[in-house]
Image (cartoon, rainbow, N blue to C red; front, side, top):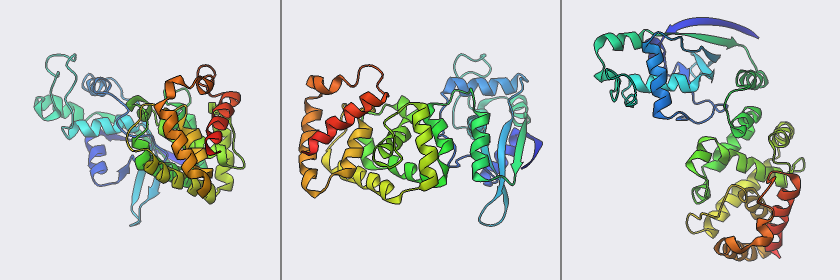
Amino acid sequence: MKSYNKTRTVQSLTRDIKKNKIVSDTSIQRKEDQWDRKKKSLLILSGIQGIIIPGIFAKETTNEKGDTIWEILDGKQRLTTLNSFLNDEFKLYKTLPEEYANKKFSELDEETQNIIKNVEIVVNVYQDITEQETEIIFCRLNNGQKLSNDNLLRAHMGPELRAFVDEAIEKPFMIKTALTNGQLKKSEDQGVVLAALSLIADCGTTDFSKDGLTAFVDEFKEDFNKENVQSILDALDWLDTVIEEKNKYLKKISLPMIIAVASICDDNSKQKFANNLNAFLTDYENREDYLQYCSKATSSAANVTGRLEYFKKMME
């Protein structure tokens, strides 16, 4: 593994982003727009005031044309914030000093614009690294950072598993669930899909803790089971036909079990499960026999198993 570092100005970095020489939407990365406008504005203010902006880490690779590009491993939110501000995509927060508040980049005076464009950032670049080394570096860089458990899990997935998860979370059924914007920002929809997969895989687990799911992901990616993956994708398509509209009771706590059971239904049990599932959602608040598994230690194996068995009975 080789590495080097290079000091770049914000203007030169944004120019390379436009030319696709710097790529931040790699599979290992979390979704964009993790920061609110206030946090973005404070980053811009730091640049204006001469406060050093932390360095960025990248992986050097080549694109389909054979051109050298940088894939961002750490610093995506900082880089995308700077790029979007220079492209006039948001206004600075109202609580900033008066000369900057509520202004886009183009509305700042020329001197301030030049200060921002010439802010220097150190880019640390890794060369000749494998996918496994990429995952290790990403995890090490983010150790102790405020990434959600599901975002950290993404680093462990490997390319095949990440591709499956990305396809699954885009299924129309997922829009009908009760996952909140806050949960989606933390990539908890990815966690739901992985948890569902873990319930049907040979190497699966009912331990939905961070350590439990990480151990599952590490094992599953080494013996990738395409049948399991396709079963989950097919289940999501089928559930979209069963659930007519967004339902507030399709909560994160229940979704892995619902998806997993849907994936193992045969032609004879599908209609029973569909009918019972809709009845369950209609009468959710009165289902004390189910809610007992949803109050404390919800990710424990005992409560996960309790919820799973509850939904399995709906096939009978």
